[in-house]
Length: 236
Ligand code: SF4
Figure 1 (cartoon, rainbow, N blue to C red):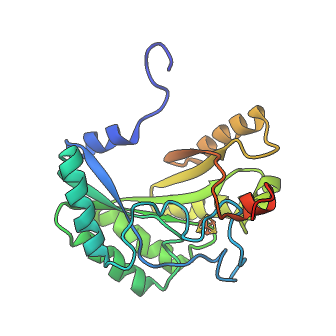
Figure 2 (cartoon, rainbow, N blue to C red):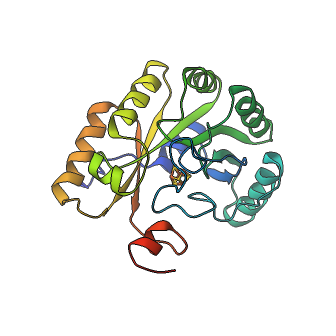
C-alpha cells in the first residue's frame, strides 16, 4: 500500500471493471502433457511438479471441456452466485499440441454459455510461431490471457528446479506475445533456495521492464510425491 492506495491492480477488480460483475475462473484439464515431462526437453519435470501437473486440484479428469465447465459453473454459481466465467486451461502445458487441436479445445470452451474468455497456461518454450498466431486470434476476439511459467529470472535457480528452459527463452516469448498484443501474466515462485531478498525484488523490476501485463506470485511449498520432496528432503 502507498498513501492508502495499492501499488498493484487486483485481477478480480480488473474483471469487474471489464465485465461489470464478478467473473470466476474455472480450471479445465484438456489432457495435455508437457515438454519437460515427455522427453522433449526433459522427462522428470520441474522439481516441484506433481505427477498430475501443477494446479490440477478439483478438476474432473476424463470429462470433456464442456462437461468440466458446466460442472464448475454449477459449483461457482451455488457458492458465489457467479454469473460469468473464464475457462482456465491450467494443468500441464496448454499449448503443447498442433494449432488445429488447440483451436478445437479453446473453441469448445468458448461455446459454453456464460464463458466470456480464456486463460491459457504454458511454458515459454512451448510457443511456436503458428501457435502464437492462433493465440493472437483469440486475443482479438475474446477476453484472453496467456499465463507463462517463469518462476525465477535467475538461470542458476531455473537449473536447480529443472525447468528445462532459461530466462532468455522467457524474454523471447514475452517479446513475441507483445508483438501480437497478447496479454501475458508471468508466474513467479518466491522463496526458492539460494535466492536473496534483493534478487527477488530485482525480479519485479525486470518483469516491469519487460512489460508483462500481470504477475502471479506463488509461495514455495514442497508437495508429497514430487522430485523435490524425494530428492532434497530424502523422502520416498
Ligand atoms: S512446466 Fe508445469 S507441467 Fe511441466 S514439469 Fe513444470 S510444473 Fe510440471
